[in-house]
Length: 541
View 1 (tube, rainbow, N blue to C red):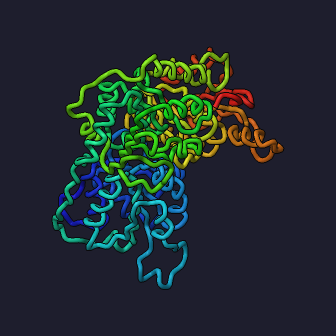
View 2: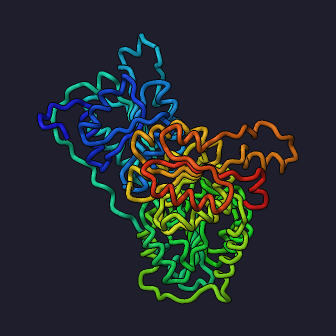
View 3: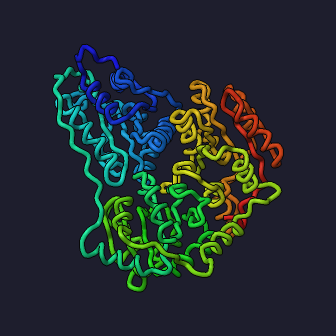
């Protein structure tokens, strides 16, 4: 860090507080209004990465959060730069990702008589952030400390700090501020806890639905211990895949968007005599999961970081607290036992495996199967939005949290490539792979230049069917004419090579296996275009 003289600008105070919070990476595209902020970040020891679009910056920053535990930082300049980032900030808000969004703006006095590119960033971002701040020189330390706390605590999410040009450069006194102590973990107590413990002690068919709070609170170990002690099967949301290793005999994998999976999982949940929603946020779930149980007929315990205002489901008992401490409090002193007689959990696992076979000669399922076979167990994979994400989220076996990253709440396209690149930056010793459709790839192709400039070895797998496959499928299901969903074929492998990477086009398992092997030893990024037939997802999701 370069602050030995302690002649600090307000932007330096902001940057140093972010460094103190563990931040080491920022992503974005600068303009004149954020040059001081950019300089301050670098001087504080936070590396700035220039991307080709602000939307990609947010997803790279999200991957940093998942694999370092520090908030991601997004930097955008006034007006159009900030507006380009609205989608990724909205995604972070719905997907519960702590991002610090730093924007530049003109000084308040100038805004009275100057209108070029001027708009109210705080009003724009207010609906899709947990809080917004306009920095002042006097409050730079306090505002940043508040922003970090708000972003991380409770259910995580993005916070905007709008930095006026004059404020960023203003010199401030090197005055130490008190830090707000992080809140202690909260666990349930009292009569409601004893009631819940009684239900657990007598339940013969308990089930856990685990969600994104488990991922964000790093409570996977407590979840696994709880499930193993009481023989409780665990279903996760897509975002929470891997919080319990999916090879575990009690794990029923992910749920969210697949009607095929719902045919197995929804009746299974409805047959339970105790449902424990462990950090489960139903924002990820399709309408088929609305009100699938009646808390007047079955005991339901909801453990959540925030009160239930969604009304997607209701519970018999609501605990607003952290998942790990709650599970420990529920089980303390109770004796483990066998539940779910007649191998019902094993039968559900077998039914899911049958619903999503991996033995196709070729197609998206074969692509995922070959990738799973040839990639290392600790590979970090991302999936874009579309039909492939639904199928992959059901087929892909996660051994650890955040190893299948995706936009699971907002479900935005264009996330997979930057998520995988962010993982390559956060965990350079691990294999990082993006899986997206051809439309999603075209949305973010410019970031291949970023991958080349950073020397990343990210592998980009592109499923090529020249169609918005999920939307085309829905169009046909509604017996509508084919409109607005098809586009031309392109040479995606050549696009990869043109940006300085390797490129392969494959159309069978053997070619894909060879391409993956070459990609894992390449000294640069690789694009693998897997050509599949139109309609490949029919009957598969």
